[in-house]
Length: 355
Image 1 (cartoon, rainbow, N blue to C red):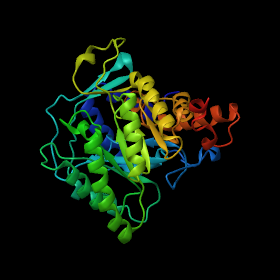
Image 2 (cartoon, one colour):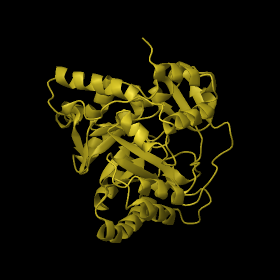
Image 3 (cartoon, one colour):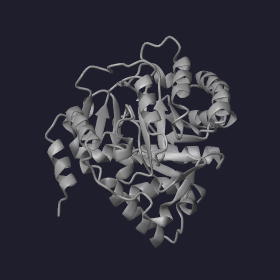
Image 4 (cartoon, rainbow, N blue to C red):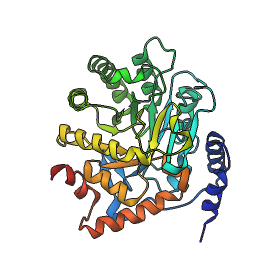
């Protein structure tokens, strides 16, 4: 039987993709959303870079750019929520239309361009959560017209540090021109060096926070090895693998498949999982990984975990299945772990990469 939330998700499909996103945010703000206990399944409790997660399924950055509905998402059963990407100054992003459903492919293309209300408003909302339970991280980026993008990351990290459970530097969006150049060795060493230097006084004042880096799926094996070496030497606590892809698999059949922007959803599952596996092999357990890209079921979540992810994040699948999906993934993941003889999530991490 269809639930109220399933019917609401079906109704949103008749709206333009970005209008549907805005309506979903409004519904969550007004208290309309599913409820599920994030800690219902003891087998799913796990740890990530010192964070105690009630379960390993997180909300990826991009849905709640301005940190407006983090608590509603936690109430839906997510083990953690990543808000953002936020930039120092507010910016409108790219021209509409800029968000496209690929229904036949269960995919999404976006060229939003870090549209957000700026870090001051974002930080105020994070601060308003002080004392509340739940792990809410902040994903930070750079303004499109910034003359010093590394400085933008440093500024945003400083503004959100006190109240964020963790901070992610997003250097992998394909929709801000030149941003992915920060993944190249010299630029990455400079950025992470400046973040490391700025992090020390923040930790002295407000305590330790894990610092994550989000990378693209469009990397070759040399880039994977270089990034692995650089993040370890600069004290990064986890890698998020991966952002959207600029590639267009030949099997796409949807009308919107030729739109420019980053592709996410089901077609991203295989390539992002392969890059995840390469990072797991390059890092050899030196820091944890978060798997993103095409997670839409307990089986796809477990595949990411077995490829090397300590946790996963979802977003695009919610476009098609609604926020009630997270509880279904958790139920199925718990059953699959039990069926394969795993008593904890940690036992399954990387078993395929070690084979």
